[in-house]
Length: 132
Image (cartoon, rainbow, N blue to C red):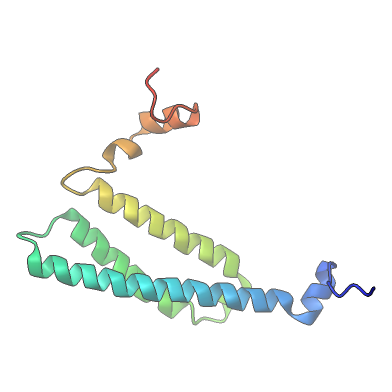
C-alpha cells in the first residue's frame, strides 16, 4: 500500500500546505469578524433606540466595533498571511479583553469580582469558587 500523506515539514512547504492553511485561518478570522460586526452593530442600534441612558459598556462596544472595522482592513495586507496564527491569536485575545472590559464597566459589575487580583490568585491555587 502506498502512503500518500506527507509528514516532512519541508515537503509540506514545497507543496504549499502552509500557505493554504494560512489562507484558511485568515478567511475564518475574517468571517468571525464580519459576524461580530453585524451582531455588534445590531445590539448597539437597539441600545441607542431602547436604553434610557447610555452606560460604560456602550462605549466599550463602540471601541470594539471600531477595532473590528480597522482589523478587517488590516487583514487585507500581504504580511497577514505570513503571520496568520499570531494575528488570529491577537484578534481573539483582543475580543476576550474587550468583552471582559465591557462587563467590568457595566452597572451590574458582572466581571468586577472575576477580574480582581485576589480572585486570580485563588484560581491559580485551584479553588476558583471555594473559600480558604
